[in-house]
Image (cartoon, rainbow, N blue to C red):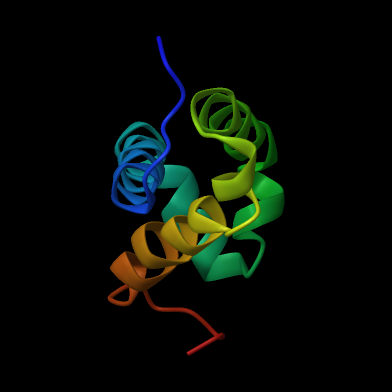
Length: 87
């Protein structure tokens, strides 16, 4: 499979991976938001997602931090309804 070379496709892949993390780990996401340890709690899953993203995207696009932004947009912002001390 050829590497992704466009910003649009890299963002799309990052968001898809982050959405899968949310879908398959909803309870952990909620717990992580409540306890302010989301990224530590999902460390293994996030690293697996990052490895997949980096294996599919060209080096130039990897440095643009699309994956990290997608994690915040999908995991953190989507959990705004969860009662937590952080907000």
